[in-house]
Length: 162
Length: 416
Ligand SMILES: Nc1ncnc2c1ncn2[C@@H]1O[C@H](COP(=O)(O)OP(=O)(O)OP(=O)(O)O)[C@@H](O)[C@H]1O
Ligand code: SF4
Ligand SMILES: [Mg+2]
Image (cartoon, each protein chain N blue to C red):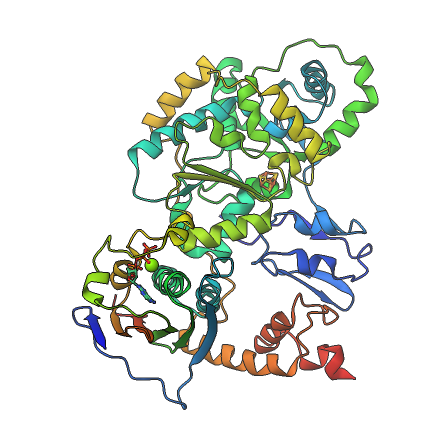
């Protein structure tokens, strides 16, 4: 199993929203190869954030990170799920999939690195910019992957302390 | 300035039978039916006119000015919108209509389309000097600008900070006329002959500038219906058709981008299509484009609800008349464009502010509590979006309940 960890300077783990604290949970399935419906989960997360009082600039950072992570499941894995927990200080997003896994995450994080199939490239993806883009937009990122089993990607974006 | 909301779109109670067609057509969920009548939620309405388009009883209408307004001024200039040029079958007829305006009390006619080339000049120059944001979105359709403020607040910086052709036209008219005729600028009336309620509202209550230079807006259909009564007696005293055909292309979708130097452009028309495209912009999926022209109405401004001609017929006319690939430059306008670009008068004076009025609360904690409550209520509702409660969806009713504007018993399935 391989791991990758990133957190922004000064990042302090926000308290995990427990059952007592007010929070919103969302969860949506992702189907590998289904580019027609790709991005549904991240759109719903975005829509929810707009209903809450989230700063539009932060909403956009979340939208891009969630969208790229969701597309990676569609493009590279078989099936998966995107879930989000929104509390008043932060959003945590979890994307897990059953798929080929990522043998070398450090390498996958390099801008331009891609193993995208010709079909995926035809859909306009495969520039190798998704993962680095996620990292640039989040405050905390953790990836765990096991070859032939799947990948779990988690990230957190804080609503304050810009 | 008075920042109370003015809206051109309104409901005539006597005609409304509470049918609920309009509540579902509204992209900002601004309408509810209460006690059998449609009510527009003012802060949410963007004056796009979708409710007017869909209402089977003509109860949703667009308020615009009346010709009697001309009496306030000693000299009146009509400013027909670009789409006006497509309302009749030939240029000859068009000039007859323009001359007909003189019979209605106007002293002069200035085509809005003449300034389109000024705006194209400005957009071309601006896009070359500013590559920071991709894509920029046209500021021409005020319904789209308001849609962005309300539903896509993070995209306000994508709106190109360039004034609209109608504002620039009015400034040019005022400057030229008061100089040539020696009349005081306040004695000069400038009336836009409008395609849509969005522009009536944009004139009464502009976004991006403090006060509009236009004195009023009169619907195209009202004007043409009046002129048709006496069209045979109209003499063509003057030629008012001064805009080159390429400038008239702006009346239909696709026309605005044809005058741009970049090919990396996208054209979208119809408000639900615009919503889809803006969603993609928000996801950074459309960064390969430099510029998007987006029109709330199907076919572009020829599809505005206050037009006279059918939108598809009008669009076809524009395509045929503007077929040549040549972008003919109106030399007089080009000189003005250069000068106005340099002294910055072509730019919006104020930033377009986000207006995220769809959120549940301004406080995040409270908003989360409300959303939790909303989700709980939603579980009790049937989820079939029947509209009988007067809300566009079950979710919208749940939201109204949370906000204290409705009761669970408003749902007919719960009430029984
Ligand atoms: N969920 C995943 N399962 C398996 N492999 C993945 C997954 N996500 C990323 N990868 C691997 O990491 C590489 C880099 O991912 P990244 O998102 O940066 O680029 P891309 O998806 O190839 O192209 P782009 O995101 O620019 O369209 C991918 O090509 C793929 O090999
Ligand atoms: S597309 Fe044109 S006619 Fe329709 S709302 Fe926008 S500006 Fe008005
Ligand atoms: Mg990717």
